Image (tube, rainbow, N blue to C red; front, side):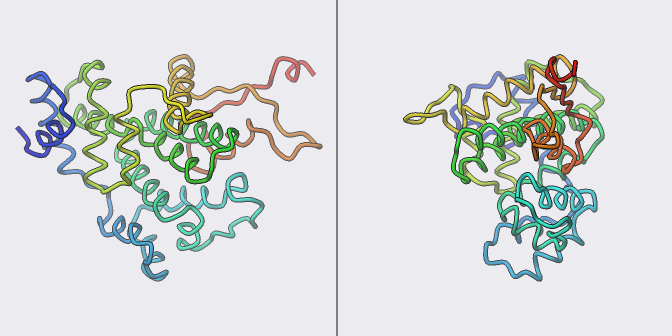
Length: 285
């Protein structure tokens, strides 16, 4: 049995049936330990350093895939997220990182690198970014502080990240894992990924919480993640994408939440996983 997986299970005090334990160890050894993100891990180390020199940050764009750089650029130049900046204002990679924040940029780089490892991961990516974008909007509409909004967005994005090694294992081993097994244990595999790439500690709680939680007078960030997840799972099960009903901007309105969602999906490169439908009264006019 893999010692890393065994120690993680022991730390969490989880009881794992022997067949599941053997399979989890196999996934860890054959996929997680051998993962190649397509760039040098030093990229993540630089983004971990809040005092990193701008020159070092700018060099990162030559070390990661162009697809990732382009999607980060789209995110950083989003008028919806960062105000009415000039198009292309965040032209340098350093500006992209500074606008997003070092830790969020690191999480986005890792998430995109993982989702782009195989085309079979695209539906999972669509679901994950749907949850992240919807979770962020909900958190902002509820008046959460920026740090809490970030926790909701990043936690929502990575909630199912443990499904990635499971899917890659199925492809590599030409096998099919039982969905009940994946549903039960993907949080454990996700936690193993978080530890491997030294992600922020608050993300672990996203995987491990069991109950819908409140703060003193409002929903907790974890509860907002649960709500976003519920909506996204229902919509993807029914439509294969996130479908929302919303008016779109007209001559008197700059934007609506529906157009906000469209803009964010377009910026990150997953436009095909969202559809905004006009309310019935708008559709008839």
